[in-house]
Image 1 (cartoon, rainbow, N blue to C red):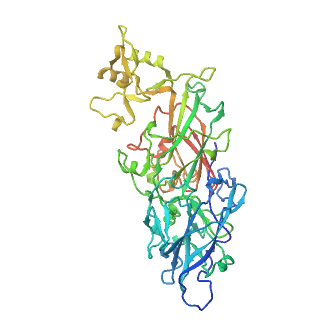
Image 2 (tube, helix red, strand yellow):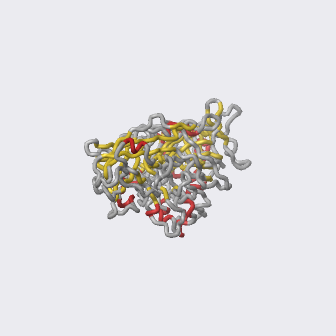
Image 3 (cartoon, rainbow, N blue to C red):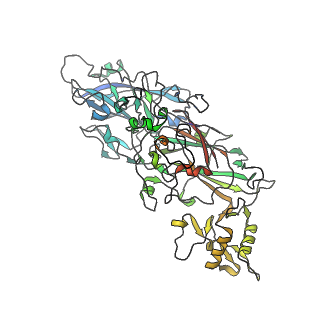
Length: 600
């Protein structure tokens, strides 16, 4: 099985300054309260060490850099907050109040290591603190037009609306934004401060142990700032990354041979890869990753604590990464009917024609898979919400060639029906239809002109195709006609399905593998047994978290997928119940890359 690795981005430099007590005005002493603008020095760097979280075999992998575009920084905003002795400086995330926001100029070249920028240094304006005040910073990189600064008053705006007023805290930023991954990556990858823990001691762990805002020293002059302390801000991308591998590239095609048991009718069939896309991707984003429930996650009922809290220091400092998050619809249960919350909350593809773009590239035997990535917003859910209509998944579009000949071609239109684990050519299928209907007197069965791929069944008069018991089903009277273009009668349609079972028509060999659910944590971290009801120990088994790279490797294909993309928004299954025909193994390396193998 392959490895599903993570990519991680922490921009950091020098010291985090979380332990610094020298946060007040660093100008001349005894000058009284300061007003107006001062200056701060901020360094933004890439990480150089991997996490301590190990693969299942016990080894620790190295950090994967990703592509230059994923590290490019085009513009930035620094947002400042203040606390006083009365508002409390030990919990700035909860108590620090918005002061002012500034557009800042970056070092355009940065400092390069290999093919990515390693460091940006910023000397920028900041509000001078009054006596007793402390100042904290939030960085927003690659704002992509989502955030702007009103230069007249320094107010931060989000999609044109004010985010903060003078008394607002960081929580004002956390209202979910209606946006897309594309919007957050158009001009560089949007990044904001990463929440980091200042301890790995879980006993007595409190939310105040998590630091998102960074303390800064504000100087009265630019010259003092240039020669002063550097405040390091760790940021992370707001999107997750997904890539696909596992097909063999030859003769301008990606292919895979079906591997099944000896004697299995599918064994040796050929699958040609045509494209892939993501299903159930979130439409909303919390700008800063929400880990407010970490004290709950670290409780005894949640099993392996290390899956939530790392024990490897960031840049050698007493700062530790957190591996889970709450998105904007984390606790919501969705219905699935048309126009429901499920369709409003997620980008849902219910049939092939709804997908306007397929990613037609994978990686094997060509260049790195990162060149062919898709990106999505964070999509997480509570343990009891891990169902197929809320979990980000991958859809594969393929051409399935049943019984390939020596030239590698074979049946185009083919059929499966009932419980038969076999494919039938169009000629074989129509012969079986004639037998099932006891056709005689020269009457023959043929495919109806314009019949499309899909699953066909008998739908009684008055019933609605594509809903309820007939969700994802088509009327067999739209598949088969008799001589002289005669439609099947209701009795004939019912007889045909009774004798053959539901019929899957793979038009031109089109075959879709509808559900490759993206898993976040290892099996041994969130172990699940068949028939088990999800509990707290399964939290994080499925989902996608920002700044993680999920590499899906198609390990084996054991037979045809589905003739079309199923819509399961109305009748979702628990995620693991889909694993009967799609089996996943995930090996995890935190904050680098993750790899996942699947059996289709």
